[in-house]
Amino acid sequence: TCLEKAEKHRHVEKDVLIPVIMRDRAKELCSDKVQAFTKCCKETGFLMVVKCRKENTALKDCLVGYYSDPSFYEECKTEYLKQREEYRATGIKKKKQKITSNI
Image (cartoon, rainbow, N blue to C red; front, top):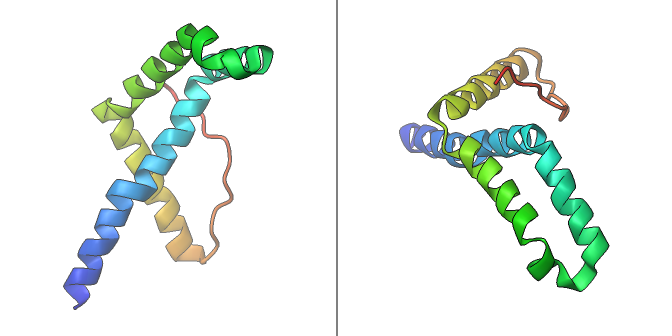
């Protein structure tokens, strides 16, 4: 039914589409930790699991901090709704771009 389709769409928005925006924004906001972890991995090769623990922990802590922040979720939800509204008005899907934050 129409109601079931709407409920499924809301589920996809809440559990998939908004988290994608959250992930992208969090990666950007944690970019210094992403770069440090990437650099460590490139320098240590197969030993990265052992030698890059500090960088990996710092990166995880940064990302999880954003993922678990209700206000960050609301910001990303607002961004998603804005993109959805623009798509519905124009029929043109917005290209992925870097998103800046005022956090």
